[in-house]
Image 1 (spheres, rainbow, N blue to C red):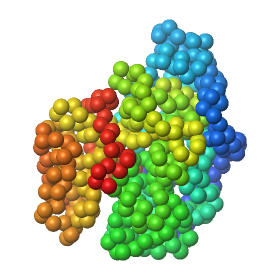
Image 2: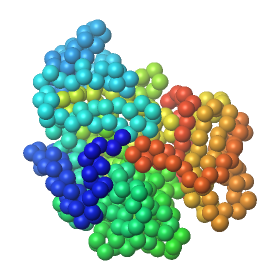
Image 3: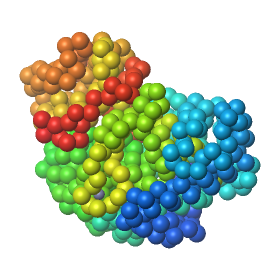
Length: 480
Ligand SMILES: [Zn+2]
């Protein structure tokens, strides 16, 4: 549903929309770069180079603080922890976290107001909602502290990719910045406060893509921030038109980045993709560094645990669910929050020298994973190899409603050959086994889900984290 503000915005001329976008940018700027931004950045910088012991010391101190605060001022934790027989004195360090119950998404949905600290100034809070691709959106209140800290993490990660605030960059994400009924360019608006070119995801196609590229070139953009699927689509159209646009970096987040997407984006923009991970619940943040060996956990932002189905920690090298404790949202602290995202904790440290641990292979939500009748779990990125090199496929999507069948939805162009279906079938069967029957469905379009996000895999089959297949996940695999 559109608000009256959205409707007014849509009816304004483009020049006024640009002014409004810049004005809005100024307001957001005050929130995100407010008091504490510089010290948050300094903290992140010092933790990057600190030994693991010092990082743990910082986390333990913040943990004690947030647990005491939660126990004393958040009604839900007071009740829940008392009935579990634990109090703040029992939680002195990370190793004590296991004494506390895990907080589920459903608990947050059912008890949202009871999870807000009585000490919070309600007028200062912002209610944020997850995109709801799971069908169960969660709403969380952010206070200023977590807003500033999240932004500090974002810009710290961007700096690893050579980007700095103030330099022109482009954004291709879900916000409906250009009214959908508009059928003539410009398909972008300019936020002069941030030097940010906001590109519309909804108007991008083979015809308009060259205009996007020209505009980015003209604006002197050297960084693109995008959903992996959106950047990939732009790169795909650029490939069709033999276009390239050299950038310093492309920053992706919000969806699992598939290896095929990374490869094409990097070739068209002649730079590396920097993938990052976060969530509206603001409990964990991770990003690739310039070495691209995995995603560094921002340990100063939240405490990340990887747990199996029995809620036991998985050893390094193992796969589990990300359960995280945010260290900065005092208004609505989420402690041991089960994100529903799967990942692997790397055995090795990154060659860049940062002590921050690495996650390799963040698989995304449970519905991004295909499950075989035998219970094997195959993450989407692994299956994406089956489509690698098939140039006639414009878009694809795998839909699984029952373990025995998988529907392959394809949008194809004139380059698609009859034998391509056999190649895809062969590639998928190699990874899934014969027990899954494949069905091909040729469609003219694949609709986007909430906030223009694109899900490559849609599965409603329940799964078990312990059986996650991780071989070759991010190493590139044999097909690379
Ligand atoms: Zn690194």
